[in-house]
Length: 299
Image (cartoon, rainbow, N blue to C red; front, side):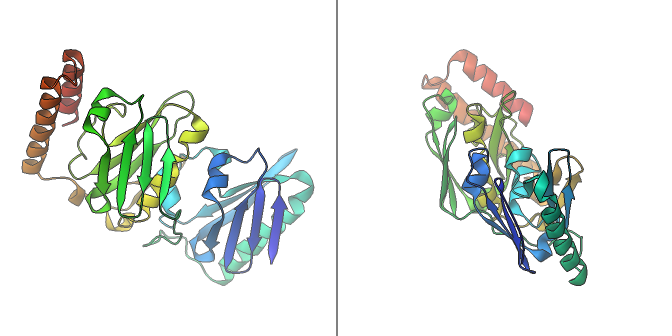
C-alpha cells in the first residue's frame, strides 16, 4: 500500500485502485468535499506526477480521455482547487509524494495500461438522486429525469414556463461553464429540439444561469456529471475534441442534429410559445422582441 495523508486529502494506492479522499479542513473546496471519495481504477489512469515547489508541491493525476464523466461534463473547466485529481503536498512530505507517484507509474508500466481514449466510462460519477440549489433555481436528477424549479429571481420567461422536466432519453448532452466570480456561468441541457437554440442562459428555459455564489454554483457540476454518466459515451457520439488547456471537450455527432424539416418545426413551435406568453401579458413588448430576436439568431 502506497499512501500519503495531507490536510488537503489522502491518496491510497493498493496496486489496482487509487482511492482519493478529500480533506475535512476548511481550506478544501466545498465541491471536493461534496463530491466525496473517488476510487480511480488503474486502467483509467494515463499518468501521474509530483510537481515540487518551494513551499509545497502538488500530486497530479491525468486520466485517459473518456474515462471519467466528471472531466467530460466539465470540459476541463473545474477550478484548480476543486480538481479531485490534484493534491497539495507539504514540502516535508515531498519524498512520500514521489514514492506514491512512482508506485502508480510502475503499476501502469507492468500492467501495460494503454494511453488511448476509452470506449466507456471507467468511473461512475456521483450517485443519484442528486439535487443542487443554484442562483437561478434548484436542479435535481433522479437517474431518469432532470427537473428544474426556478427561483424567484429567475427571468420572467423561465418562471412563466413553470418547472422544466427533461427525460434522459431526450438529452443530447449537458453544457457546463462555471461562474468565475467575474463572468456568469451556466448549465444547459441540450435536447434534439434545442440543439440549435442560442438563447442567452438567463432566458433559456433549458439552462441555469450561474451568477451568484461561486462556491455554491460550482456544485451544479455534480448534476452535470450524474447526467453525463447516464448518456451514451462520447465515443459513440462523435468522440472527444482535446484541448491542451481545458482537457477533453465534447463533439456533437451529426446524428444529434435535427434534419432541416424538424429544424423548421422547432423554430415555429418556439415562436408560437413566445407569442402566447406575449398575448397573455407574461412578456412585455420589449421582452418579447428581444427574446424573439434571440431565437431567430439561434436558428
